[in-house]
Amino acid sequence: MNPLYLDIGNSFLKLAARNGSDWQILFDGKHDRIDEMISYLASKGDKGKIILSSVRQDISEKLRAELSDRNFIEYRSSHIPSNRLDYKTPQTLGLDRFLVCLAAWIESDERNVIVIDAGSACTVDLMTTKGVFRGGIIMPGLQIIKSSMRDHLPELPKAPESIPEEWPGKSTVECIEWGVNGGFLLAVQGFIERYRSMVEDPVIYITGGNAVQIMNWMSEEASLNYRKYLIWEGLEQFEKIIRE
Image 1 (cartoon, helix red, strand yellow):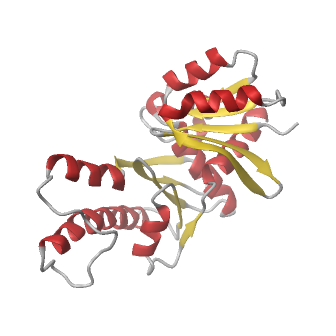
Image 2 (cartoon, one colour; image 1 turned 135 degrees about the vertical axis):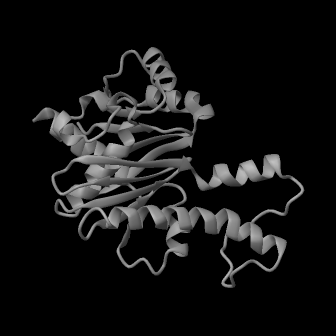
């Protein structure tokens, strides 16, 4: 009986199952749709295990309470072997950051990997050839930056989903495009360059809700590898590590 894999992120609930060499997304919605997910899981005759990674313990606890007959196996950062971490506060590390790096590291045949996870928060993290998570950065995701602009600077025009070809911006809209989209991209590129000064020939992966948009802006980045289901690959591989 194949397990289900559940990722509870900062904003979304995502449920998936292995489908051959690919993944099937069974549920994808914001936290306010948790009752729909509970109803979906309750309606399933299959009572197999649900492998869970969560950055929201309140959501995890609600699922366990409402679905007490289901076999939830929740992995946390405390389950990461100590020899796989170079991080000062492992107790505060979101497991999802480790998981996407783990999946990328395995796919890359255990090379140095940089992983950009462009979701509600954007993380840019490093895992070395020894499979050691070295940490990285957390910054507001692109949509949070844009919503903050709308909420706090409502008199300004909305930024299109593009970066002007001409520098500097010659209109208010172009200046906003550079400040929001261009500023976000330059930050990510800057972090990548800092990693490249630390480790040899890293392979760069990108995942998350804004990954495709960022890829379009980084078309010159030849080594950028988009993997939509990196979190599921990592959660599946992590379960294997724990069982060993």
